[in-house]
Amino acid sequence: MPAAPGQCQLDAAQMAEAIERLALDILRGLRPDETFVLVGIRSRGLPLAERLALALRETSGRPAPVGALDITLYRDDLTEKAGTPIVRPTEIPFTLRDRTVILVDDVLFTGRTIRAALDALLDHGRPNRVALAVLIDRGGRELPIQADFTGRLLEVGDDQRVSVRIQEVDGEDGVFIEGRA
Amino acid sequence: MVAERYTFPHKHLLGIEPLSPRDITAILDQARSFEEVCERPEIKIVPALRKRLIVNLFFENSTRTRNSFEIAQKRLSAEIINFDADTSSLSKGETLVDTAMNLQAMHPDLIVMRHSAPGAHALLARHMQASIVNAGDGAHEHPTQALLDAYTLRKKFGRLDGLKIAIVGDIRHSRVVRSNLWLLTKMGAKVTLVGPPTLLPQDMKATWPGVDFTSDFDAVIPEQDAIMILRIQFERGTGSFIPGQGEYVRFFQLNAGRMKLAKKDVAVLHPGPINRGVEITSDVVDGPNNLILDQVTNGVPVRMAVMYLLSNPHGEAVP
Image (tube, rainbow over all chains, first blue to last red; front, side, top):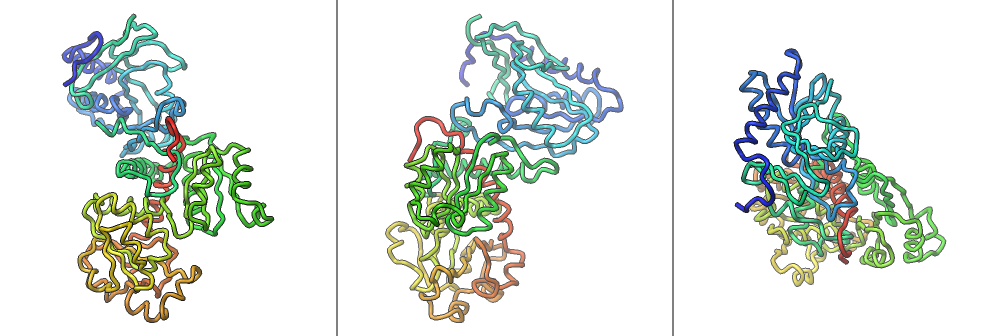
């Protein structure tokens, strides 16, 4: 396992605790009669959504189905990125109609990913409501988009990068800040 | 994961020959994502090629290939211009290069071309900044057909490596065969070419040494995982290479009798259009083994994948 570069903000235990608290916040924000689903933005939003779903099921006993959204085809910066990434399938094996969708991502920064995710999501159906849950809000918004549920707020410089590492993708859990403040 | 770092290195799709196995896998994997788009319950369109201009330049008739490309382009939100040779200046004597220069002057992003001359696409590529997709050039290549065939086979069998595939019919005049030979041999499939001796050019053995050639269709049927039937192309002069349709039917038609020799789950493919009762009988076309309409369905996501990957090249263009 390669050593994670940068300064550790949350270790594995703190990250697990943040996810637990995020799940409780989501439960408090839902009406008892509200049918909800989770949709994780690939790549790291998806395992995060799965962990939140697990916590939600254990705490509330309510079903918490999880879908996966790949937003590459909806990005507004396609031509600015080097090379064409291979897009993985979006998997939303349930209807969004009359549902509340909890959209899940690891880091909220400019808001452009969420803008693209909303476009992608609405092409799959018309949910009653979409709420956004993120593990880290690092500020730096370029669009008028805010999270409904936030695990941690981090004060981060413009040139710094917040890196969420997650077992299923990176082989370890933790939140790191890379680059100088 | 290595797959995460891979980026498609080509600017044009002139044929399967220049592609690596990794490139072919990338196109097929990408197509899987677009298949999901095509199967969505509601909106089957993504904005991936929004504000891109694609020209469809068809110097030969082709309703189904062009429709498939056009549906793929619309599903990617591209802007489309259809340029028909019949109505263009070509009928007034303009050369292909002049046509290309005229098109280039209008700055299209991608050109899909079918032309009767092998190599016409390479010529066009030298005179254009746009990406070129070969939608068929004479008897040379038809790369998107081979890719959709491979996609269809991979979807059924889960792999291409080690599959046994017989391609039956007019091997001599078929661009579908040449693209399929490049693709299937690169991906580790075992290909047997079947047809009358006059339609089995022996010089192809030099290019594809691992491929078997035979005129005894019945003998090779039992071992095949898939049988790809080609149309007898009377308009390309196939008729003068065979004694007659009756004899062709007797030895090479895929019918109920021959299906009894085949594996129970053998896949039957045909690039279309089908001549029912000539190279294949109706009971086989409509039977449980046929993947012919799957091929048509899969053509759209495969062509979406090709145009998407070509539209965003990085670094220097690869000829």
